[in-house]
Amino acid sequence: MVSAWLKLFAKSPFKPLIKHSEIVLKAVEKLEEALVAWSEGRKDEMLKLCDAVDSLEQEADKVKESIRDTLTSRIFMPVSRADVLLCLYFQDKVADAAQDVTKWLKVCKERSIPDELKEKVISIGKESIKVARNLHNAISQLDIVIESGFRDDEIEREYQLIREVEEIEHSIDVISGEIMQFVFDNEDKLSYGDAIFILSMTRCLTSISDRAKDTVERIRQMLAHS
Image 1 (cartoon, rainbow, N blue to C red):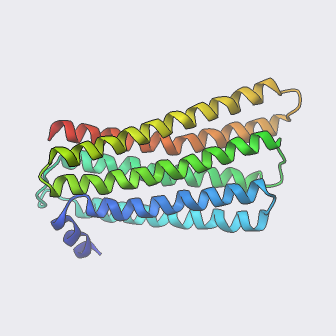
Image 2 (image 1 turned 30 degrees about the vertical axis):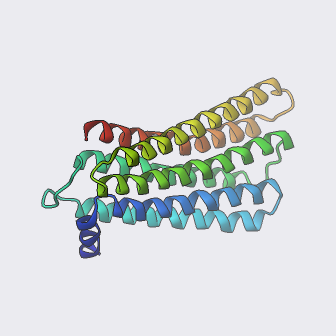
């Protein structure tokens, strides 16, 4: 495995991160499917999808550790090794956040909440796929930037992807604020358990875009130092 990663690093420091981001994206996609199954009352299917997210998160962890073990000072890097490792760290946290959501779905699978709240949760799920896909594209584009010798037009494409991640992260923040407002406006209609469930799950969902934003912010800093 180590030799395989070394071959990828020999081509570009971001080839392995692209492989990792593909797994992270799959985890978020499975999570969105699980959220839809939850909202439609398909509990058995939801649990299977949650298990799939767990498996993908574990796979992402293994890839992360393999990359860390391989990324030594012996490998020449056109960018800071510390920045690459931080990108990997934050990107892996996206998969961790997706797994955290599944924990709440499993524990609270029997709870029923207002349809309006379900719709907003599903909206965050769909936006989370967008942010994970744009993060994957940003990592892939950074590889292109490096291979191009930091050409201006490729750098501008990278900045555009960074801005798109930041815009989606903001839109998710807006939706999560609406969920919080709904919960507190309807506290007399919701049980304490339901309120804790929806607020905690929403916090985990927003962590997906928060960590994606952290990753692209690290990319922004790498570009600034190039």
